[in-house]
Image 1 (cartoon, rainbow, N blue to C red):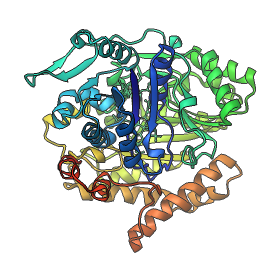
Image 2: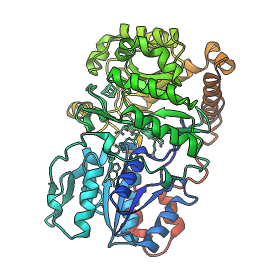
Image 3: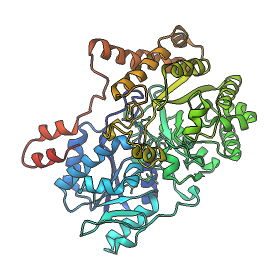
Image 4: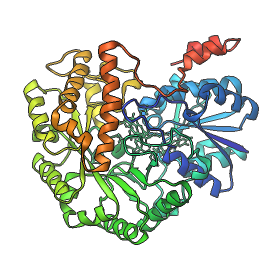
Length: 501
Ligand code: B12
Ligand code: SF4
């Protein structure tokens, strides 16, 4: 039985301009391959004609089961469009969708898009394996944990929680050999041509109200052991020439042992690779004695979710961290010659212009890489339910749930356009300062490269767009699904057009 895993066509994020094979998809594929399944993978964003190539492949190969991966809310309509197209050209293929958003919003997704037959709720490996076996043997799917579907009467069925895999070390290496690792889009332009995103752990033990990751993994954390992490990184260096990584783990060093093990392995292997890790201020402080070791092991930057400069807001979003800790962590990183990336959240209900001035004053003193976001009530998070109850969610177009679009007004800015302008204004005030522009000539090559990329490519493009109406950057092979349907013409397209999102 043939299984095709599809990462649907997406518009690449204008800010990052990076595309990488999804670590979750590669992990699923590696697992299924080891279990002996006949698998195939299509990362459509990288295809010359993303929608056409997807349609052609499904039409000619008609795989029995097709999986669609939707890793974030902003991608859900791409996933639904792919499901509709697939169902139209191969009605006999069974479609299963997985990922965070469909897991949290399973019933809504199934009702909005009847082309999707099943949703895998939660972690995918074991559920998908059991699902494929059950489909192959025509067994009762209601016995497979972690599945959601609509039964013959149209009632929503959830088969129950799938327990998490206890030990991530039991998973095989992600299937890099099935990814288009040589494709020119597979890079992280802000970090370098040989950049890649990797992922070695799942979840987080904190419970910030806006965080979908901690909600998805129910406030648990599991990790691969440092030896296997180092094996993967070494493979990526030797076989794929990758040497700079955004490590997607939400909180890399939840335990000190993980950090110590990583430092020992990477120092021993001398692969000369560079890492951007994510952590929390309190953990950076706790591990101060390890910071030199991290740097010597190749870490060049810590990204911390510092969010805001006021303890009252940090308390509201349940950050369980203080402004003083944020300051101390940033100072320590500087002291140990590590770059500081802060992810920050603005657009809080009670926020005022005075707050934003103080916010900028506080963060611009230390931050090398300014990760400004608008607070977003991602489906599945406590914030989503809180805001829904209070009727504050004004934009329900999931495409906008990418932290760059205002979804909720604030007490002061009562329409979303105003909130969007506030965001742009802070970005402008942050980047167009002499001190920031000087970083274009920084002696630190990573910082210099990063700023040249952001200022000369991203910020310049945005400025030209806003002043002269020049188009915003988009990948050259990008095609809106609706445009594809028009181009495609003939019989099916009217039905599909009516369903298109
Ligand atoms: C890699 C990555 C990317 C890549 C995307 C690569 C790709 N091909 O999709 C890049 C760098 C491009 C990216 C961009 C963005 N990302 Co991103 N990204 C990640 C990251 C770091 C890793 C995802 C991953 O592989 N995780 C590991 C695996 C194990 O988890 P998983 O993907 O959930 O997969 C498991 C299950 O969901 C399930 N599953 C998944 N698919 C399928 C399919 C089937 C058929 C089945 C059965 C099961 C199944 O099984 C998998 C294995 O158990 C996560 C953070 C994280 N730690 O997860 C953020 C994350 C997914 N990104 C996020 C966001 C918001 C974005 C952006 C929208 C904006 C931003 N600020 O980054 C942009 C997208 C805009 C755009 N147009 O490009 C959020 C999503 C939040 C949400 N709920 O919407 C996350 C969680 C980060 C965060 N905490 O904020 N991202
Ligand atoms: S610390 Fe980070 S990963 Fe953990 S719950 Fe908070 S936002 Fe999510």
